[in-house]
Length: 396
Image (cartoon, rainbow, N blue to C red; front, side, top):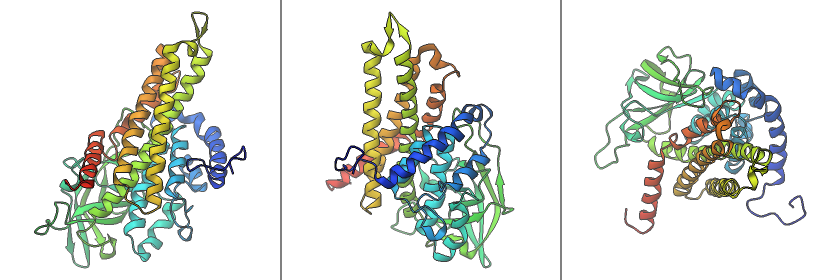
């Protein structure tokens, strides 16, 4: 039942979700929010907060309990990401990418021995995970990766480079995509790509200088180089040359998380703008009473709620094992555009104050802007949605 005794609807939080979100908000408000602006200014990675959130289970959101995880569904995991993002976008990206990308790939493709070895320290936050797909010459066209893995003796040797790797410097476990062969005759370009799991202490893994970014400054983003990185035979995740199906599945899940992250940032911007507009007086009354501002606030709330429902639908489809490629792309596209628009509108509501660092809305905008790029740009999401529409009528 809902708090007022009415029968719950599909978009209402369950009792378990409310029991999780309530205490989490308190921790985020008391322990994360106070230092968010300073971390944004310094770019310092929040190791202590990662450990704290690890204690709360946030780094093993969908990991089965037998490996030390919280065993949450995708709907609840998205709610968690939204809550963290509403306080600290950088920390939300760390949580989302660790769970949906590195851990997501391991959980999908790893065998029992690999899961028992690699997952438990990731689930507790003892180790962070990095997922290595993007390259200087392979961004939106992920099948164009040039990193190579060759068999040598009883194992593999990887050479190549990756770019924009989240947790690239601070991770202890890396899932790396590399080409092991050319595409077989009659197969798609992505055939021949394999996935490997590697320890961060491997001497063949060379970390570059962390990127200096517009926003999400205390999230670690780093280029990597693999210089003859030797791996044992059992580092291969899944079947040789067949990793791209897993990559696509992982990216689809990641899009749900990015959509939730954008909504959290937009929600924080709306809350700040709403409070400011109710208190700021011009022409003898609160500016929220002026139609131009009132309509702007209404538009922000409407777009964010529509995006949240799309995220909830995509997550529910994923949990049910149903097709959700287009739904995830819609959730990510709507979530990111609504989130960024809300942050931009909040700056406008605050006027000159919104453009200063005295208020957090400029940080929310800088952090949210990445959500229209990561896990596939707006343009790629449009292509995915259009492709799935055409497929539905047999016009691929």
